[in-house]
Length: 149
Image (cartoon, rainbow, N blue to C red; front, side):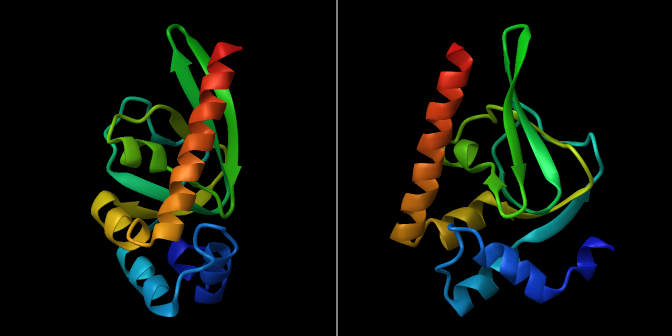
């Protein structure tokens, strides 16, 4: 199935199933979908490389990605993300280079939102901005803990 063949109902169901998007109004959801582009990656594809610039936010529609961080000569596997989960918010909020490498573990489809739209669509709502910041803080704490081990 091509990425463009995903039924709108499935796409909406995935987004609404995420705590981050469940409270979007219909006009907000329309605005979000208009500004997101869909990509499909093959197994082994590096979506984000640690140190890259911070221009996009990603929502996984299908598939699975791994998150790995390089610390000196060591690479630490931080975990996996799957359908309905998102990544890229940490670099956007901190406006710093990517702190991890994200690689497709299988054929994966995701929506991509550029920084400007991330700010105007997602961060303008205080409740949603709070959820995104909390996700950022939780991931930062988890990353710090894993790096210490």
